[in-house]
Amino acid sequence: MTGTKRAKMMGINHIALEVGDVEAALKFYSSLFDFELRGTHENEEGRRIMAFLDMGDQFLALNEGRAQSPDDNRHFGLVVDDMTPVIESAVTAGGTAVDGSDNNFRDPWGNRIEVVQYRDLQFTKSAGALSILGVDGTKTNEAQKQIADKGMDAEN
Image 1 (cartoon, rainbow, N blue to C red):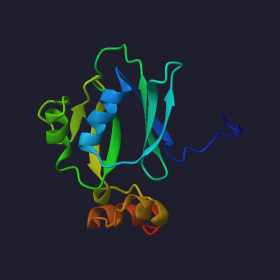
Image 2: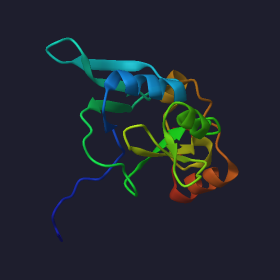
Image 3: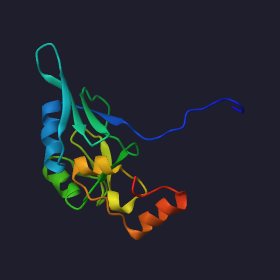
């Protein structure tokens, strides 16, 4: 591909998860996470078949219609302000901890999710997104070092 211009990946706008029932999924995810509902789509009968969970400048889309078996290795990492209560809450709400993990679970439809803490990662959010989310944006020394080593400004 020498000489061919390629797009630079800049982030993820959203992740779409297939679930068996959007209303049940909203109940499940609202028992784990504090979020605003960005919007929904309804079918012809007026039943919600899609819901969009706001994450500041990104969102998690829940789409009705999961048919495949539970995910084993395929997953995504969801950044949270505090991962401490997530796995226990997920199990209580009908999810499953993955191999006794303290940061991996499957929702009731088999979607595998890894939760990681914002303060521990080089991943950054803008001051505006942090403000909307109500998160202070503090990073650990290791995360600050990763940010500095990449030449990224931790304040933006």
